[in-house]
Amino acid sequence: MTKGNLILRRLRDAFGTRITEQVSLASMTTFKIGGVADLFFETSIPEEVVRVVDMLADVDWPVTVLGGGSNVVVSSRGVRGLVVRMRRGKIRVARPGVVRADAGVSINELVRWTVARGFGGLSRWAGTPGTVGGALHGNAHFQGALIGEKVISVGIVTRQGKVFDVSSREMCFGYDTSRLKEKDECALWAEFSIYKEEPQMLRNTARESLAYRKETQPLSARSAGCVFQNPGPESDSLLEGVASSAGALIEKAGLKNYSVGGARVSTLHGNFIVGNEAVTSEDIRTLIETCRTAVHERFGITLRDEIVYLGDF
Image 1 (cartoon, one colour):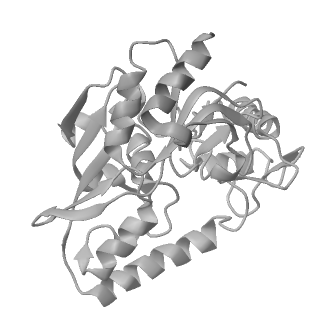
Image 2 (tube, rainbow, N blue to C red):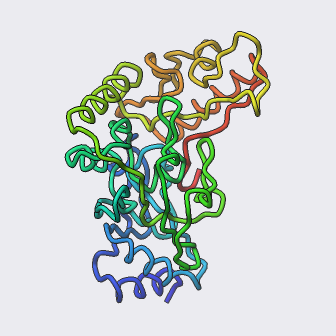
């Protein structure tokens, strides 16, 4: 019996037919592309994620965690090993001034939940794609604000199956990063700071955020959000008069509406790549590298990825 068959048997002994084989991931990403996962497991329960990770901690078997499928490009060749999709989950008031949400909860669901109950602090994040876990992983940003600024604590599981809680400070939040990226850990849940506010005021804030996104981002197109991190003066040598914006640099490099295969630089926002029904992961990656090269050749700035690649490229 092969190693893969032994692992499949081990997982199915625990979870039955919820462990599936050769599952296409395309419908689970906002780009609507991607090959198959060797093994696939979906859950809304953090404890089940811990159990799966712990079961595979002693074997050399890849585990990839997928949330809402935004901010990722999944290879058309698929993803080896086990893909765990964290989807949905529980939201509750942990204590006064604190709401706790499981990592599979979408940010939009969390916003709706808090707004409906008159809890302020998260309404401006309306329209943010993806899940709580994904937002923590890359420290999601919007109009200069970082989601990490609202975080109080996070539950984490390591690839070795160790579970513990960390404070916001210990999360090492930075622009487009957190300890989840650096240490290859997975979030199970997060606690956010909230306060009482009039629901109508919160709804107004949420609507304003949604309107801004619709005006400035190609929300109706196949996309994965911003492709590159914005360069910063503290880490990049920006030329005078050059905006500290990846989208602006891409447009100034003459790539607005530029396409490779089924992938195209958005005419609405230069840091978004959109795809048609024929787009492939290779098209997207080639266009990303074309943009990176063009910006470097013209401005001497090397754009860094905000997007995450999953699978074999």
